[in-house]
Length: 331
Image (cartoon, rainbow, N blue to C red; front, side, top):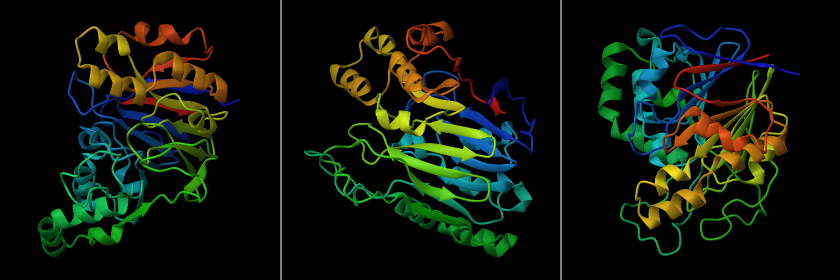
């Protein structure tokens, strides 16, 4: 059985070049700033190769502070198109590009949701086109920063950024019956969305209404399995992704925090139907047989004991409330 060691990362103390290590770069839900935590972003480093899941507020600086091997970036994985998960994609690309800044010099994939196809029923588009996918997102970022990119290629002899960035929409298997105005996340077997010589990445739809599509990921490495829930309510697809995982990084919400502070009924309804309470994440970890449950994307504020207490009835494994920059080493 694989074991998991957790420790705080010291600034500019690089993750080891061997083994598999999960780094919770940012652990806050958003889009809001309620404390010192950075926005959601999780790194998986496998034998020195670097994979980044989501790009929340502050991740560009966190990559530097935690000593991530950005020059060995292999893939970026995007769970869904909410702004708190993609807002710093431009920063990650433009601040980590080229050898003179210790950045990437080889092509890498950006894998994420395709076009939704439609807004939820009754929603009026205020910006068009209304439902871009990952390939559209990256294309539009490159267009928006075209002057900067063109100047730096000319003036600093950098490799053309559009040659290095390789966006890819996740294609769902046919026959699922999923859609933005129907069932958002029917039960499904995870599908492969990325592979290289170090890792195999699988994805499955998760339930984060009204967003479609929204994904969780399973990252299979030589040293064990890391599962990342993405934003979701309690859902069996997450248990499928986390089957026998060494680490399950699961989003979590403390509804008591919101109820006690007079949030509007509409907002309370959104949070409750779109996210997972503490006991729900514990039930998923127990069903999956995950060996270590890590809480991240923390919705609300609580002490560690308040976060963990409701899990004890359902899950007897270790539970950690992640901090920014914390390292979980497999094996």
